[in-house]
Image (cartoon, rainbow, N blue to C red):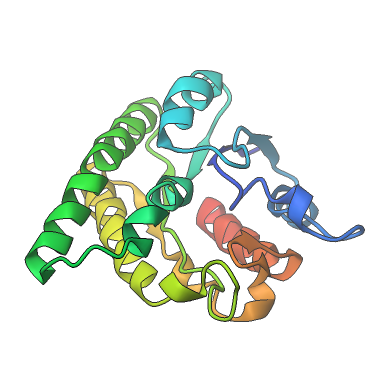
Length: 204
């Protein structure tokens, strides 16, 4: 029997965003398998929250697999960087982006190091790009945010390689507007696609 701990944010803890009668990611996982899923992920959490409130709740005696999906809210916390009107050179913009991501990178590596030491079966999820085009608040950063997402996902892939963890590329899963309940949260449809990929990883 597999016992899967789910850590992260609303990419997993999306129950509040789906319609009545629809499934959250965890409910899809339970519906599609007989495994046990320990949801530690919390809507709104960041890498800091995972370190402070989730890691110590992983039951290392029972857990056979860990799934981590975190980082989106860390990026949203720096949305002002994309929306500022200060004129900067390309070099200055890239340098500032690297500086902004540095502490997030350090916390992310701390999380993955901790989880990999406890259990070798670890799946890291990248951050998807969201359904931002046409939204009244996010539309102006819809294109630029792709660069920030790519920079963070480089951290995910690099960290995964360092600690021999598997990586699930969410940008290849959340590909249509129907996959989102709003500009940045998974819908019933997107959650089902995500749960299918997680289960395929567990089953292998």
